[in-house]
Amino acid sequence: MTTNAYNTSNTIATFNNVVKKYDMDGYAFTAIKNATCTIPKGEITFVYGPSGSGKSTFLNMLGLLDKPSAGEITLLGQNVLAMNDNQAADFRSKHIGFIFQSFNLIPVLSVRENVEFPLLRHPLSRRERKEKAEHYLAAVGLKDYLNRRLNEISGGQRQRVAIARALVTTPTLIIADEPTANLDSTTSDEIIHLMLAMQHQFDTSFVICTHNEKLINKSSRLIHIMDGILTDTGERP
Image 1: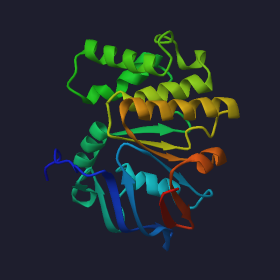
Image 2: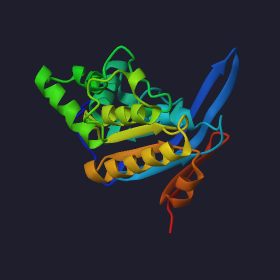
Image 3: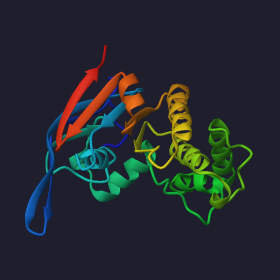
Image 4: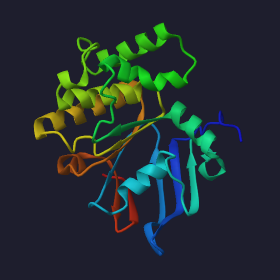
């Protein structure tokens, strides 16, 4: 498998009749049922649906954290099912960034060190890692917080750190799973507007799972999941 082959079309990922089943104490549970959709390149796609609908399962497969039970997933022109665990981990570290609702930052590290952390898998010098981390922290408005510890900054600032960490490897795709769920409404709006600005500035593809009704109503592209059944609404007028 050649991991440097890229899809030159406007599609970053495709799902074709994807099924995901789990065995729960001998009971087969189908989390995703025959999902077919496309994720456009250089845009923001919103995924929505109630809790337990299969959104996280969908994002885990898109982010190469899990594999489907059946069907095909193509990401950047690569067949996901053809990757072994090491190939998937390498591909993920180079091309995918993650933003989580619980931030998933490392408390013992400073703000800058948290952003540097994903770069440890990349062939960069210590100085290059430091410069890249500082560049992206400045981009999210945290250039004066480089040496702060996480307990010294707010929840909204922690999520800004998480966004900088996701961007620092210059990924093609960023997956955000309920990135504003633990924030108040004002901070939530600030974080969403920041992600929109980052997408425009860096031309990165975002897939954002959200319950935010304002976003759902304003967005141009939606994927709805209900009881494991996915509906790709495509571009809204």
